Length: 312
Image (cartoon, rainbow, N blue to C red; front, side):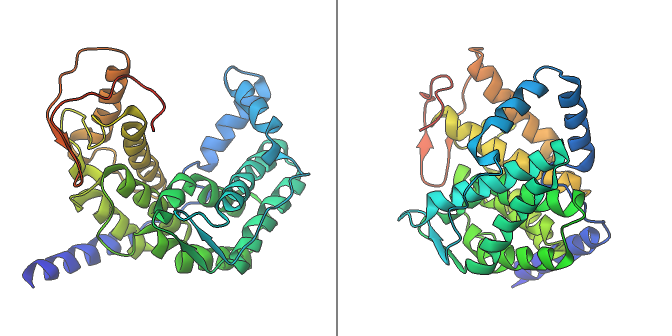
């Protein structure tokens, strides 16, 4: 009972501190300053920014001719149901919002908004055993698109914000796993955290932000608790794809929170940096040693992961 009381007090105090912050849009995770810098490099034809933009502009999901594949009332992963259609539409909404910003052509913004609002008005469920994994993988897309449009385009209305917030909070938040405390192990749990950070920030919700910070800091199955000072994380000896995913998800969440005025990068003596450096040194073939470590569902006595192979 006492532990529960202290947890409640902690969350209240953190929520109060977050409430004092001004929520920033865009900021999931790209801020207005980030976008402005990117656009300046693209317009100057600088490498590699211009080349990356050319790839974006050529993508089929970046075209005004893109045909929306949804919306549907329900989506699920494992067992998959309307999943690829949801993925494609969320990716398109992000690509189109970026194209709007880079070109100034409002037709891209209109199309991106129409996709998001159509799904928000239709989708009522996100199920399956691994819903949180897709919500984390595509947090940059649904969260990023909504935040970019909200913060940079005059055609985005308060009604659009309220409609999309309803989808994020009523459907995506519970499906992400962030509404409770029992997150999946390692990489799976950090995908929940990435989704939760995007949802909380777009919702301007200090209580949700405080809860996501608590998950990052204190849940034993994942987040910072599943890392070591050496830079290892729970997936480091599994394979490089999942090890990369784990620290990348935490970095995404940290960047979203940073844009909202909270510093998770310096947590545990810059632990996120340590995990990125461990991953980089490993894949550069440097001798780094290994401390037996793992997750709540597997313990690795030796590191047999090899160098980067794209994951599995």
